[in-house]
Length: 277
Ligand SMILES: NC(=O)c1ccc[n+]([C@@H]2O[C@H](COP(=O)([O-])OP(=O)(O)OC[C@H]3O[C@@H](n4cnc5c(N)ncnc54)[C@H](OP(=O)(O)O)[C@@H]3O)[C@@H](O)[C@H]2O)c1
Image (tube, rainbow, N blue to C red; front, side, top):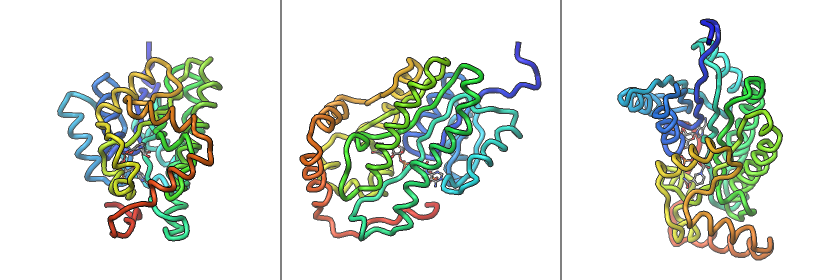
């Protein structure tokens, strides 16, 4: 029996205002979990919550900049005030930037570390101990096929996703014995705003790869997590790309990825990623 004082367990989705995170939130709500939707864009979060409530689910929203150092303590306080604890954490917030490291803004590139790496690690440190103590739940981390190699001209993004893959795999091993799952989801290109915002849609590499649907990625992610998988690579094209990326010698991968990511006939400057859209 659950006592009245015990918090309810929620699925907390970071990066839930759009794209893959929003799609995973819908799937979790459909499975009967209360969901907490987190991102910066309050209006988009409200629209995502309305979508879930209209389908009979329960959703709360919190507008939060995950690059802020106090983000995880603020989120934990919000959950406690709402009578909730984080049963399952979905780290889907993230962004990338295409271009030479010397041409891109230093601040925006360092922001990739803040959001894709630091916030993900900080949230993990904050919520994983509770999951281990309860011996249930876990974390879904959005990696990428970019996490299997270094990636010239999208250097910070690939490096951040290499961290996510390595971190998630090691954690999976550490906590599996406690009934807790950490799953890394590593898709190839997905049809979301990410591709245009990062400038990846103008790179030859991303143009040739088929685009996955965010709902499909969300279903695969959720199913893989529920079955205790360490790594989920949604779709055949992503699986094949990951195999090639793992087999290629590093020098060959650097030459190939450097070539296809640098070449672009589109003269538009690389987009800015700062601030709420
Ligand atoms: N789309 C792809 O091709 C692809 C492929 C492989 C992996 N991924 C990964 O999948 C994840 C989700 O990507 P997506 O395709 O869904 O991208 P998206 O549509 O651009 O969504 C990104 C999400 O991250 C949130 N976010 C970004 N910076 C934030 C910050 N400082 N604080 C709080 N929230 C922040 C955004 O919300 P706000 O802007 O409202 O804050 C948004 O909800 C990312 O980690 C991405 O690297 C994407």
